[in-house]
Length: 225
Image 1 (cartoon, rainbow, N blue to C red):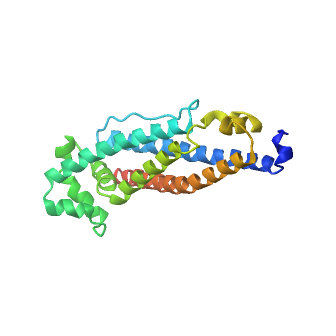
Image 2: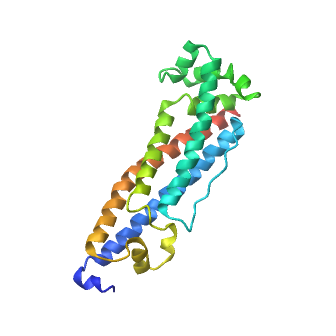
């Protein structure tokens, strides 16, 4: 038992809670890496992009890993912006506006993109048009990506940012030392509050991001049948 546990008898429970919340944060990070790589694969395959996949830096900090995902997302957004600008240039204004209209049926949007996607990409399929509609013609998807980028940046800038990803391989007391540098009651309470606050937003943003990418991949599969 740590010496401070005699002064703060709730510390053992708090240490377990910090460990549990840390694992949940890492799970969300891992899901975001996986989802981003799925999106990268779709863009490379169907929109002719040359994006690199990303890997979690196991010996890095939470901030370093947040930054890896953010940088990958920024590159993805640049590629989508290129496609969007090309669509805006090639389509008549009325047709381009239909792509942004949430009331317009998705099948109609795909048909609109299909008219010009081959000119933009040189060669194209209905799957490419579907990807463009889902990612370029959807303010919802854009908003989801922007939200996750914002949440990741906030986590990286918080007291959690300097925490190492790999501390879970250590014992409980070593985890707390690695995370906090001490086991004082106020520090444990601050860590728990920080984890809880950021996890609520991160889980929500990560789930929506994962769901949006799953919808894209499912649409692609449907178009390729």
